[in-house]
Image (cartoon, rainbow, N blue to C red; front, side):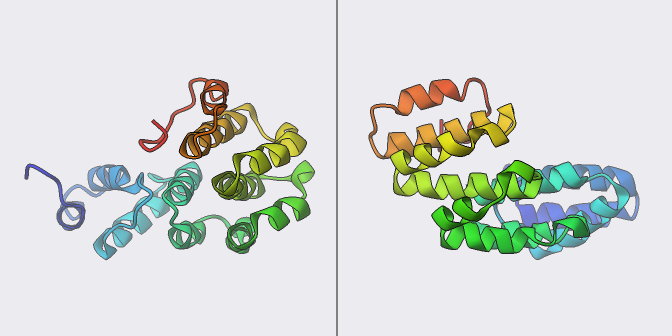
Length: 188
């Protein structure tokens, strides 16, 4: 095939799994890293890869982040069910961050935040930046110290993007503050 069709590739990997179980799961991992929904036929592959440890918890967080970047909150919540039970509060956090990002940020306890809370807060900040980069930046200035350096760079990449969309003169400065953090195609 010139262009790989995800559904056909998923079916092909399912068939290959009977002969080369580990190799098929490793190749299925390539289909995993997207923010878009996969064909239903890929889900058994993903479940098997998760069970075998080919796809790990960090990969699940990456997939959730990619889904949120693509604006697909439903998909992010779906994959959140693949996380350990300690993160069961994450999908409701996403709902709150989506419905009212300002309120979510004002009530979030970021001083004791783990991965889930910080990702939900970054999602809320991105939604605020879409409304107004100034509002997002004002909120960020109050909470930035609770985030790791990589998360801070990630925020500035999105602030730069939303600033550019709003034709804000500070957009290039925000992109500079993102340093060499990987940017998505829309951000580029």
